[in-house]
Image (cartoon, rainbow, N blue to C red; front, side, top):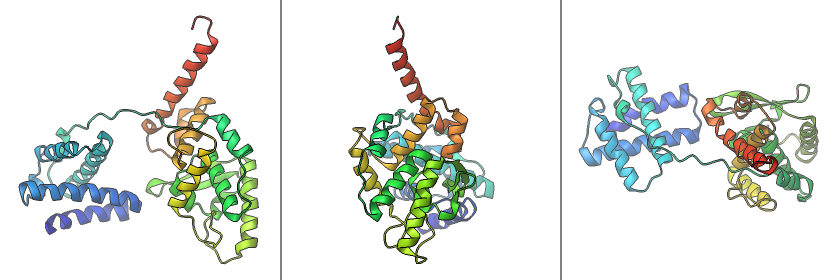
Length: 299
């Protein structure tokens, strides 16, 4: 099995050093590709990479489906294989990709969960956050998620220096190390300014450069943030999913419901293609249907 590790390593290095993918994304690629090549060895023995055809790939995908893997997960694995063989063609490892004859299963489109505006108003207007450093940090974190739509990883990596008080913007480092600038309102900037001032008083200079820190001056951990957000959202909403990503969905949905341009929302979210953003138009259509039903005399 050692041989396919040697074949894959240059591709993993390419993703890490040239594409500059995150560790999380790299692990996904490694899991998918090692899974495929391990399957190949077990089922068909050592097979030269240039001899791998679409038949082998389909066989693997069928086995994954039999194991109960979802269409979404299978599509991710197809995407990983496509990237690998595309790289293989580019570097001359293979003459052509076997993925041209592999079709992806259809994924049932699910509308993103989001929190209603009245519930967001309740969260920031009536929920009492603990009068502790943790409570202050969690409140600012929730404000950032809802008012900027940033991802959990982006919020945790957000540097104090990324806040531009004169331009009313935040500079965020997104997927693939792509930077984007998000405009923010003065009210949020005032909250950030107050937090930074208290942070300096409490922690002095012995702290990380991240904006949001624990009371010991260390960066926040994803798991604890996820739990905190879930607990706070549980106080104001009954939506099934209550996570930082739901606040990102909420940010986008509320913008769309108030007439924001789809391309603008795409840029704010840091999506690489418009297709990823278009899912939010469905919630807007549902709102229009509701308005029409309640307001039109013939509805």
